[in-house]
Image (cartoon, rainbow, N blue to C red; front, top):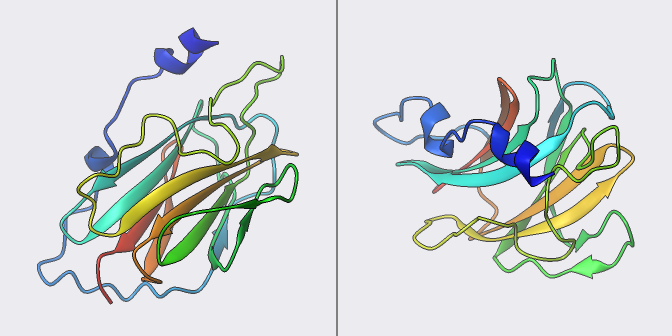
Length: 175
């Protein structure tokens, strides 16, 4: 299935960034955010990646196709647990942001479309030099819900939006 993972064009997380505001003022808030549709087996997660910006750090979940209104739920949690086993997963950082997207990491044939390993750092994600992000973890995929955690420096304001075939989460560097 690796061929299917590499068949999509690679677009840097930075490429989709809105123009940064001069003041970096973020009035996004830190309460949970959700949107889109419910779980859907035809939405396949193919990558999770990060990007650095002048005012925020960005976490992006990519899907194989441009789903119309893919669902998500993003919130700060005290503890991050695997969806599959319920086991506690350590997420280094001052706060833990849980990102749940409504899509699977397997296609119709059961082939893996995203190669994260439950409890471990996300593949191909290097957070050296980030101002806000400290760590990432994969929480698994169950019933067309795929879960990630981002360890951040502190409980900071964030926003979530859909962009083409992506769920985008921006976490501000400061209040």
